[in-house]
Image (tube, rainbow, N blue to C red; front, side, top):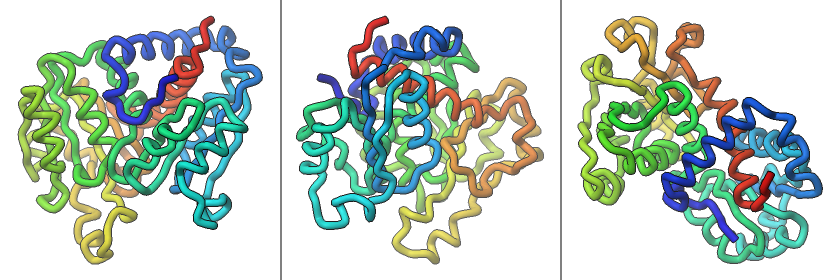
Length: 305
């Protein structure tokens, strides 16, 4: 039985296989329409979500399966003090696979150690978000056709941004990747990721507070919001939330084939005027997330077509 807790749980070969299945789903949706008939996905979301939860649920329905859903900790036995371990054991009696989002880092790992069915980490605190990374990876692949040799800029909240942490971890396995880290000093990428991922894998990277200075060199610009829910101090959030706002003017020096990604939700860090720019691919990213989650569900349930 396999789980997906960290993007490193998947080899590059497995990621490429998932990309292949996702692209086949895009081309041949009817082939997969009953692939999970009789199977049930439990979505356990103890933290707010729109895209990720609906994406998982849409993925399972489009595979012909069914969904059991917990969308609020207050509506579950967690409100009575039930442990993550006991929740996982209980839900294993009802479903065939679990997708869990939790505010505490490590909660999906605890669930996976106690469940008797596969567990997918749908985001744990500021730690990891591997299925968003799969969406990002498919988007980059469909836009660029390759990963090697790309210069990828991450802009905004790099400290708490679990999507950033997971994608950097995934990209670090490809040759010639160059990482540009753009953030306020208070929201820098955690030092353990720089040490354990970038430096350990010999990935060249630069840190800056100036987005405009590095814009001309970027192949990918990965924007993120400053996450109010990760701050203990609202004053700090208000001071930092508008650190980077991408507007059409700021793209004047960007490459013609730049791809702009964002894990969403967007607050105000990307002007709505950019939505019509062909370089903006963040809504394509949303669709790609559904296709990759479909491919992942098939893999973890060991469904062979």
